[in-house]
Image 1 (cartoon, one colour):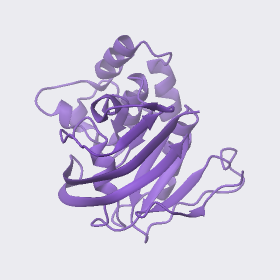
Image 2: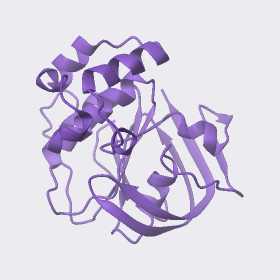
Image 3: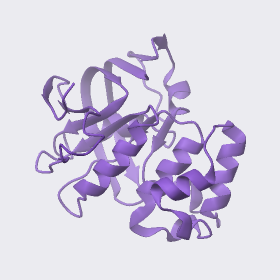
Length: 226
C-alpha cells in the first residue's frame, strides 16, 4: 500500500493543463494523509484543490518551503516527490515535436523497467487503435493514455486538474480510477461539489476507497464499504 502525507502545505500557483488552460489558485494551509485509493478534493475552482494537485506535478517548477512531505513514511523533498507523480491528461511535454503514443510507452517501460507491457495497456485500457497516433491527436481519451504512460514510467501518485460540470464523465473517470487503484496508486482529483462520482454496488471493485475531502482536509464522506 502506498502512503503519502502532507503537513502545513500552502502555495499560490498559476495552474496549467493542456485540456483546460490556466487559472491562478491559492491553497491555504493543508495537512492530510493519503493511501492507496481515490481522493476527491471537493470545492470550486478557486478553493485551492487544483493549486495542491498542480504543485505536486513535474510540470510545476515552484519550490515550496515551510512544509513537510512523507512518501511511504520517508520524508521527501518536493522535487523528489514530483518524480513519482503523473499529471493525468496533460500532454505539454509532447507539444513541441511529434511523439507517437506507442513509442512514448515503450520508452517509459525501458527507462523505468516496470513490469507492464504495451499489450497489457492495450487490452486493459482499450488503446490498441491509438498506439500509432501522435500524442497531439489523442482527443478526449488523453486521460486514459496518460494514465498508461504514468504506469509505464513507475508513477505512484496520479493527480487531476480541477473539473467542473462541463463535459464531466463520471462513469469514465470511475472506471479509469478503479483500474489505477488496482495497480496500487493514489489518485487525487479536485472536483466541483456539483459533480457526483457514483458506482454500482455490484461492481467487483466497489470496495476501492473513494474518499471525499474538503479543502480544510476534514474527511466528510466516504463512498466505500470497508
